[in-house]
Image 1 (cartoon, rainbow over the protein chains, first blue to last red):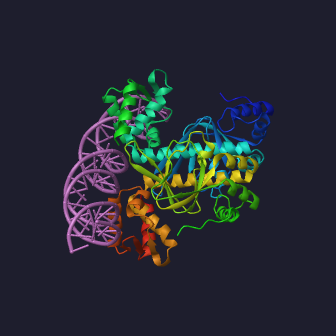
Image 2: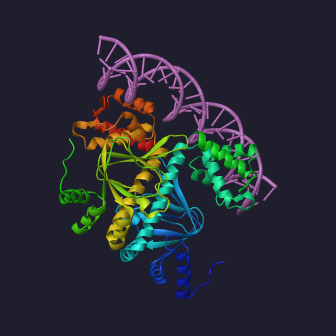
Image 3: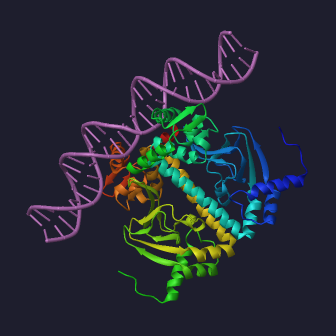
Length: 239
Length: 239
DNA sequence: CGGGTTGCTTGACCCAGGTCAAGGCGCGCA
DNA sequence: TGCGCGCCTTGACCTGGGTCAAGCAACCCG
């Protein structure tokens, strides 16, 4: 059901609404938001479309309106390392704004997605006039740094079971009845956790055998969230 | 040989010199530099002294004047993962300025060091007045992001030999006669490369057996830099 | 309906690299 | 001069997890 064409101003107010409720711009004044909405570019992506590739010159930064964007690196041998999957309300590639070296990674839609491109020049100009926006960007980048730091010690200090438990516990908190519906394939979740689909399958199977959860297709049901959390704590403690 | 006490203004101009030649502040006007020099705190650290620990509230960000500061995380089990070793002229912990969650890692001097603490409140205030400084901070953080991203695929996509080769080639470029003098112990270099001292020793030994380099105490001599670089390229290509 | 295609699971195998343990070596210090 | 203490090196061993390969189940489509 495609949205019917609307007058430009209605589209603008819709945009402003989106901008207002994202972390990056949430505190800005209505007029600043209007300025931003004025130069934002709306992009519709099909699953598998690339937003940018490693090394390309920066066009600007991005804000996910709906869907999921997978930011990853690929090694010379073609293996992908997922850096983060950004979902609705999250922004990324701010780093490319202030750096001459272009994008340091690749971004691809893992689901059909709508993404706002915030072009480089005008947003930099606005930052020059609105120091609080600069601070906000700094904050956003600092949280990305944190994510990366978190990934680092995930990958080096924790094994696959621990990473999976961590993911389950985190996503289980917001899931009614402990039922988690995967948005993508299991393979893509495996990649997000930095492992292969085989190992993922085995690890999940082990938890299932221990009656800690049950699996039906793309739905995972946590049967014993407390025990999962306990196991997670145990794993973290002994490494 | 401790420096003799000097009049305050002489100390200030010295400081300004240091500030001017670091990446973070290099383009600022003399008066802005003077303002910064006015609130900077000089810290002398002995080897092993901690600058901050994970979770502590941010006091500000830091600039290394001399020595080496090791920023790392430690797992529940006590293992350390080095994030980066910052040396003279480099700044770090900018991320903590704009984030309410405090420092996300630990920082410790790995050698006797002099570090400038740039306190949070005054530098934030200055950023509010100098948007170009904000852009500069964004740039600095974006390069830290790049470092982390680089570490990520180092740790996941490359083996120890490749990481070591990479390190050797990078440090060999600026070394006269291909002679590299380690600033710390081999163990600490191993940690920096994300491995154990045993594996490090073995890997280095293998390169020595292949006549690509020679080792004498803390001095590594590259006998065949071209072959090292070739090997590095080969390793990167096939993974 | 029958044959692709795509995704999941499982078994078998292998290997990089971590850990434990046992020397050697250099150095400061009494 | 001898002792102790960090470092480094080397050997032996073990294991997490990646890879290859083979079955399966679900689904789409002519």
